Amino acid sequence: MSADPFYNPVIPASVPDARLHDFNIYDYGGADPFEKIHEMHRASVPELFWTRNNGGHWIALGAKAIAEISADNTRFSSIRPIVPDSQNLAEPIFIPLTSDPPLHAGYRSVVAPLFMPKHIASLEEGLNSYADEVALRIKARGECEFMADVANEVPIVVFLKFLGLPIGDRWELLDLAATVVRPETGTHRDDPIKKLMDYLRPFLESRFANPGDDIISQIVRQKIDGAPLTPDIMIRLTMSILLGGLETTTSSLGFITRHLALHPDARRHLREHPETMRGAVEEFLRRFAPATTGRQVTADMEFRDVRMRKGEHIVWSTAMYNLDARQFAEPMKVDFSRKGNHSSFGIGIHFCLGAFLARMELGIFLRQWLAHIPNFHILPGSILRYRTGLTMSLVNLPLAIDAD
Ligand code: HEM
Image (tube, rainbow, N blue to C red):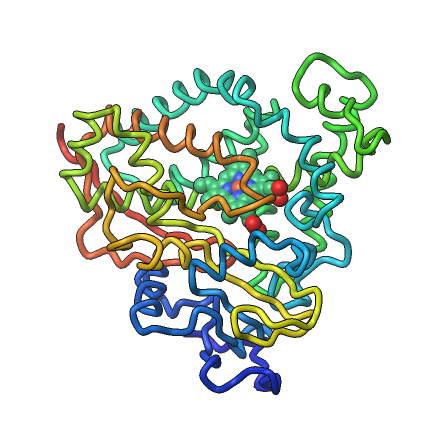
């Protein structure tokens, strides 16, 4: 475990000893993050505890606490959700994610048409042939470094197709996005954010000046509370959509593929029973939830027997909800027939706008991969490494493809 430069030894007087448990949400000490969360649940760490890491903040470990916080946008604000607080931007740029009611509904309604089933369904054919091409390419090579060769690339290509942007720009965009979504590196995020905005600006401004019949042109014509959209708001909304869908989907692809590499029975089952793919994708999303999120307390208050003070932060990994045995029995087991709503896409008004797209993307990818590559395994002797930040992900996944 590396030293935390933001460790704050000062414990607020309102935090009782029983609620103190140092845990760096950005550093799981090299362990599989889901195993680590499971271990915390089993060790009966309190459902709400204070850690001195990353400036000092609350962590919500219990499913009930996470659900209540997510549903209460009055007492828990999304405007500055990140720890340490210095990593939040002076102005909320990641809208609608970093906005509260009443503004949130206006922002969300503007981009909602992008996510309408009609638009998403129009991408299906292109995604199928792209996933087919990726699987065939890897099969021909006989092995791959899955994270670098596949999982990093798929979501950015999907995003560029989604908005009709040039596919050739994917690597440049990925580099910029990586810096923005990793506050744990301590790198200041203003510069890459500016560069991302500069990338999107000419594309969006041209749609403002000469609207066509594409989806972005339809969106730029919309209004919030009767006022026309400005290019700046549109750039922020588009950037949030880009960043929302990248590392999250990359991470899901990685953990799902790791599971399938280790479980030949699951691979066979999905090939022989394609009708179970939908339930399988949902269960994979539950078991390997990648996103970490948070809120800021808006007033001094008592919440689930804890005294919280205005300005304090509460952070949680969505996996903390999904791996709470009070919510899902045998939470570490992958069970394609499991019922119940997980929290991988969030809960409440900020529920992920890209959920439908992400589910489709994962389903298409898995179907094509298993059709071409029914058998594969992790290269013997490999040590898998994990990255934990706003998104928890595998860093490497070296695979060898077996003969059919
Ligand atoms: C497996 C993939 C994904 C996961 C696990 C995921 C997870 C999440 C979570 C947990 C939230 C809510 C955060 C909170 O309550 O603070 C969220 C919100 C959001 N996601 Fe996703 N996401 C995924 C894919 C995508 C994709 C593909 C897109 C867009 C193309 C996207 C766009 C968004 C947006 C715009 C929001 C903000 C919604 C709002 O504030 O109203 N996400 N996502």
